[in-house]
Length: 103
Image (tube, rainbow, N blue to C red; front, side, top):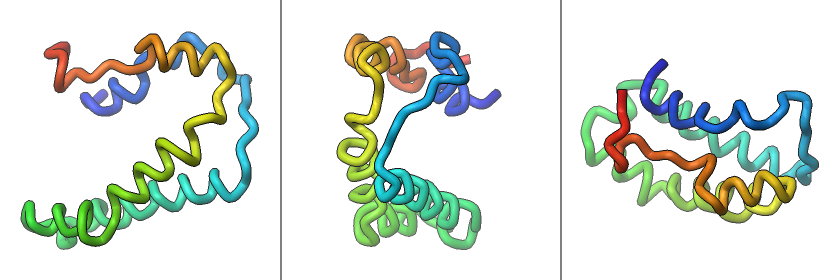
């Protein structure tokens, strides 16, 4: 399992897999399409031959803007109270690249 996958999986074991959330369809589609744009860009190595190419995608093409829109607005308030509390308490956030707990 790679470092990013470990980060994404961190804390999920505390929540039953059969639990669900309700989210407006348009918000779910927006978030799905944002992920698709990142996949489309990074899937083709020719799209990001240099750091400048990545910077253009992130900044100039607006990729960071739509990612923030999906994360901070479209998905922010869809979680049950216990999940929101877990986020607030840092129980689901662990950044191995910052806190030095990689590997």
